[in-house]
Length: 129
Image (spheres, rainbow, N blue to C red):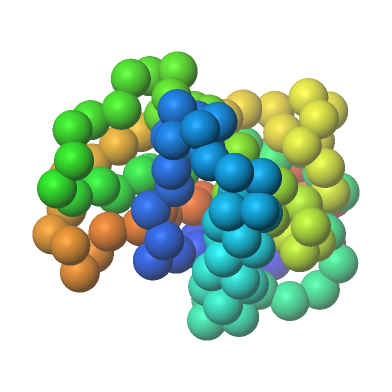
């Protein structure tokens, strides 16, 4: 059984500073686009089945281009839409502390064609899907 899931999306997560200034309709549209991006990447990665019930460790690499680096707090906050999409699509059970034992978020400069986010999910115990 593979205990790691790797998903690559092509949508760069927005910082909370930008999200908080958006109109609620525009923010809802962004969340829907993020959900769709994670859904497409999930199917491209061949992830199927029920949600992971064991605790997981998430590592998200935000791949940015043409903008300045985000502050550490904004970087973590920018991943909220990604984590919500993982829960909504049934990739992980929930985003509570019992389900997500660890979260690491980094950022890396990339060419525009590689911008987006790399999501790595590591299953921590033997009970899986």
